Amino acid sequence: MNIFGVLTMAGGLALFLYGMNVMGDSLAKLSGGKLEQILEKLTSKRIMAVLLGMAVTAVIQSSSATTVMVVGFVNSGIMQLSQAVGIIMGANIGTTVTSWMLSLTGISGAGWINLLKPSSFSPVLAVIGIIMTMTCKNNSKKKDIGNILLGFAILMFGMETMSGAVAPLADNEKFTGMLTLFSNPLFGLLAGTVLTAVIQSSSASVGILQALCVTGAVNYATAIPIIMGQNIGTCVTALISSVGAKKNAKRASMIHLYFNMIGTVIFMVIFYSLNMFVHFEFLSTPANAAGIAVIHSLFNIGCVIILFPFSNLLVKLATLSIPDGKHEEVIQTGVAADLAALDERFLETPAVAMELCRNTAVKMAHLSQKALDKALDIINNYSDTAYDEVVAMEEDVDKYEDKLGSYLVKVGNCDLSRHDNHTFSILLHCMSDFERISDHAINIAKSAKEMNSKESSFSQNARKELETFAKAVHDIVSNTVQVFENQDIEAAKHIEPLEQVIDGLNLEIKQRHINRLRKGRCTIETGLILEDIMTNFERVSDHCSNIAVCMIEVRDNGFETHGYLEHLTNEDNPQFAKECRQYYKQYQLPELKKAD
Image (cartoon, rainbow, N blue to C red; front, side, top):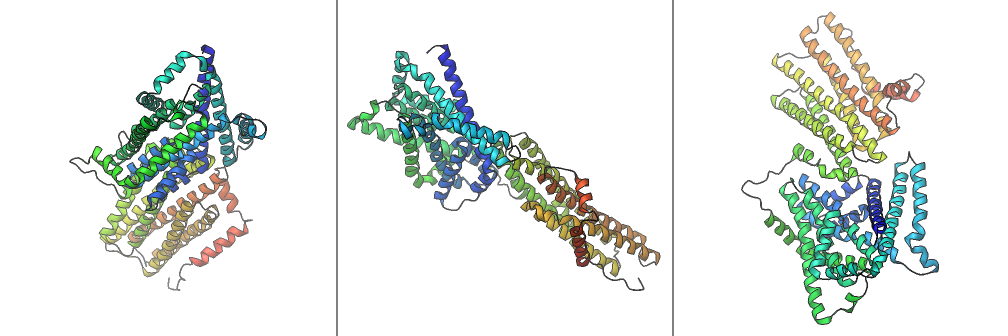
């Protein structure tokens, strides 16, 4: 092979790896956050974990990526080590899908059979893919499908280029001599391990082996030990990702390694022991792409069948390899566990990372709501314990905002789908509003504490008015959190009318309070506390409005808050006026007596 052949080979390999990367990333984008939901919703049946691991890996075309996700889930406490075993086993089966796709390049024949060859149909897929990519800029799903088709076409073109470049090596004695060296099981095993460890993809290394099959110099005696080594080499990615992780995460990566190593040892001992007596004749025959795919699949499926009943032993073996040590690792719960879930390992799969961010933001929103509700309760039923709870919840909300904000910046630097970009914008804008709601909860709680310390109280009329006001504030926050959690744009449109009513309640109660001051029915000191509480109520509703408007505007590919509100509150908008009247009726203040 001359220098031009080497360059062609390198170019084909580059296209092959790039196509695989584009196709896998686009498949992951298309699935959105469903990957994270699928992996989290495991049943107690381990066989389901195997099937889920197999399905997820078939989608993203990488057992390494699936295993890295598993390491991240275990590290953050989302997944138990016992659940991880099944997914890791399933990932080894799912990764064989790529080798079957690549085996299509080995199809030969005339007529309609020739249509099954990638060289026949991949150009068509490339044309369709580029048209979808260039013309569907506002449709993320169609663009992702276009990228999948493009990635597949590039992958197959790279495979064909590699195969064409290495074809002349069939008559090269040095090349065939080197391959004969790899027919030694130990050398072949080592070669497959090193190659896969370097490129960190067993699918890619199997594809390279399939490409070399066109020379006719690769027989099954050479191919089998290389395939065995490829299964061990793919564990390197998970092992690297577990560096610096918690002990259970390291154990998950060790389970992956032990599963492949034990399976390889069992297979090679049995196979080569039988070969000593039976002398398998097929070992000396030239391997082909389909044969490689068959061996790859049978080995991985066989390993799962043999080792599945011993899943618990794999967990124990990993635990023995990485013992607990003198100081037992603290299991995180609550807020700490939620924040630990924002693991940087998930940045490799941005759709999963974004779904984790959304889940964390929803928990933050609920905590802000809980803090506000507790603050509303202690206005009339103060206790130091309840006050301390509000303070603690507000501090936890601050922790959510700090960690989530930092993590979102990192996720924002990833290649996100259109849907995930929308989610990113919503989370970035809304989390500060939820944090401010918890700040106002603290302010309300402080006002209640001041009232309690001064042993003062509101008049009966002021108390009733404040209860109506508090009910409206509670409802708008509750509705906003539900809108945010469910990403319900239609429900978000009902937040602003209630916010307008709350503004009206604030002005009316203030006017009533001024009248009571004039008549001497209320002290200035108590009035100032009431003023503070109402101001915080009104600002809470403003933040709810910000959240609802943000969701609507981001989904409509714009962010003109003032323009939207001006259009919404326009006098010519009868629906808005109707909703406002309904809310005014629902939160009607008690009638004033003549004496008031």
